[in-house]
Image (cartoon, rainbow, N blue to C red):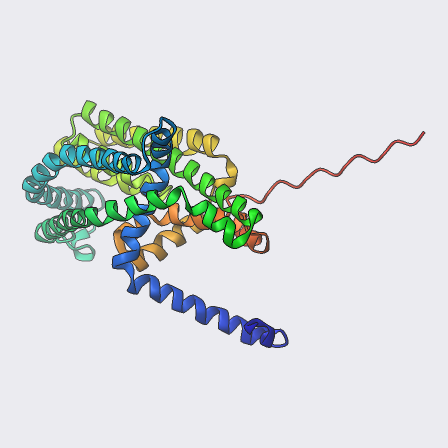
Amino acid sequence: MIFDRYEEHPGARLLFVLACLFIVIYGLQFASAILLPAALALFLAVLSLPVMLWLRKHRVPSGFAVLGTVMFNVGVVGIIFLVASQSVSAFQSRIGVYARELQALWEALLVWVESRTGVSASTYITTDLIDPAAVVDFARGAVGRAFDFLGTTFLIFLIMAFMLGEAMVFPDKFRAITGDGAGGRMEKVVKEVQTYLGIKTVVSLATGVVIGAWTAVLNLDFPVLLGLVAFLLNYVPTVGSIIAAVPALLLSFVLVGTVGHALLVALGYGIVNTLFGNILEPNLMGRRLGLSTLVVVLSLLFWYWVWGPLGALLSVPLTVVVKIWLENTPDLRWVAILLDKAPPPVPEPAPEPVGD
């Protein structure tokens, strides 16, 4: 084996492992056009597997079961797209007005600071911090990239269909290659990933619905779009909830312009994310599937660097999948412990036998 040559030279072995890691990371970037749709298709396939198994249980032929599962996903994505497209179009037409109003609010804030402190704040802080043209270009570019990505949905659903088709025979293939023990471990990994993605999706959907309703009650524009943003960014814990609240707070200042209204908006986001993200979700998943805050931030930066904004959106699910795989690999379980939010509980020592 190649590692046998490095047993007496651990430094050379470390350099070899780092070189392999560098090649893998470069490969992830280079093949992002294929790997990113494949990752999305894999997550959809894992989430949709119970639907296909339910159809197979009711004696639906495998081909029609796969087709029905894919069409179910197409319908869900289509409904979300139709609901959000009107809000996105209206938002694009209004974003220039919002940017100019934000600029006016910023200038008024600087004037207020100067009147209170007597210090010329504009000398140290530019009044052009918010450039309306730059905001418009950035927002239109982001929305345009989102619509361009919809062009790859056909590829995603096609890959997903083939994955679902292989799902019925792949476990038997894996057992034939690796043996019963490894096959059972693989099934355990798939089941845990399925549990994580299912719970995360349900909690994220509930978060988006409640946030959308709360922003509608507070008379903010585009509550559907704000709810959709909260749903998507809920896949990124801690950081995602903060980022999702920023557009709502900016709209509050632009539309109402009072600190009290903005505090109500922030209070709603805080309560929802505390109840769903810090209480409900950990209790459903268990502490074992948690990640430390440092790992969440680093994974967010890493996957954003590798695959861009969609990589950041998938960063935590991808890291959790890796963690689950490490937990079920005996010689790499220590890495999973480092990624965890808390160390595993220390088993209590067995009671000593009582003598006669």
